[in-house]
Length: 387
Image (cartoon, rainbow, N blue to C red; front, top):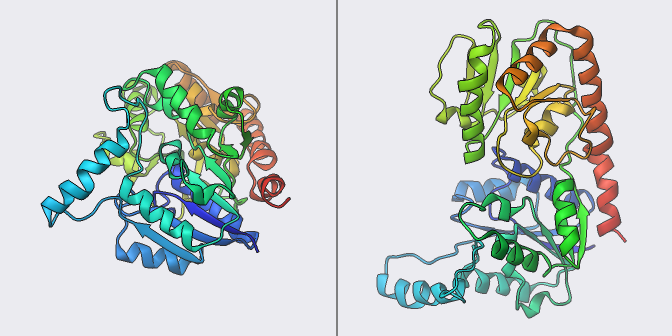
C-alpha cells in the first residue's frame, strides 16, 4: 500500500468553492486506489473548528488528520513577539530589502510542525496544493526521497499582477513549481505556460466529476437560468457586470436562480430572481434549470461551475474567460460573447430556439464525457501514480 501526505490549507468538505471541490476530488481518487492518506491543513486559513475536524475524520477521506496552527496564541504577547513574530518575519522575508513579489504563506512554526509529521512517517508521495505553500518542501531533507507533487490550481502571477512585479513573481512561481517532481495543472493554458519553463514533468489533471446520477427529465423547469458563484473578487466584478449591463436587456419573465455566496454582494432584488446562499446538493437545481451562466471578466484557470453545468447537459453562456482551461474551446456546449448585447442574444437563442438548444446540450454532454468524467480522468492519473 502506497502512502501519501496530502496538504491542503482549506477544508475540502466545505464545497463552496472550486478549489475545495478540486482537493476533494483528488482525495477521493487516492482513496479509491487504496492509498494510505495523511491529511494536513492549516487551522486559520481553512477556518477550521473542532466540529469541522471531527466531521472530516468521520468522512473517511484520510487515515490520519492533522490541522496545524501557523502561529501561536497571543496570550503571552512577549513570547509571541520574541519567539514567533520576529523569527517568522525574517523567515518569510529572507530578502526583505528586496520584496519577494510572490505570496509566502508558510510560517516557520508551521514548517517545523510539518517536518515533525514527515519525520514520524514513511511516505511514498507528498502532495502540496498551491505554489504559495511550495516552500514546505524546500530545504527539507525529509522530502528528498519522496515523489513530490504540486497541484498548482491556478497561475498565481496572473492573479496578483496588479500587486507585484510580474517578471519577479513569474520567476519565483516557476522556481517553486520546479521544486517538485510532478506539477499538476487544472487547465491546458497553465500546462502550456509551466511546461515551457519548468524542468520537471508538467501534467494536465483536469477537474474530474462523477457523471450525474438519477437524471429525470423535467418538462416544466423552474428556472430559465442558473448562476452558481462564490464570493471571490473575480466573481463579484463579473456578477456586477452581468446585472448592470446584461440583465436590463433580458425579458422580465426570465426566471433566474443565483446560488452561492455571491448573493451577499448583490443588491438587486426582483420577483424573477431566486437567491440561495448555500445548497448542499446542486443536482436538483441544475436539473430544474435550462441554461447556466458564467459571466467572467477576469481570473485564470478552469471554472468549476462550467464543468458542473456541462455534466448535466446544460448549455453555458459565458464570456471569453469562462472557457479558460477547457480542453476544447469550440463545439463544447458554451456560447461565448464579451459584449452585453451578444451575451443577451446567446441567452435568448438558447431559450427560444429548440434545435440550437439541443445541439449545445449534446456538445455539453460530449465535452464532459470525453474530458472530465471521473473514471476517464482516473485512468490518466493512474499513469502517474500506479506505475
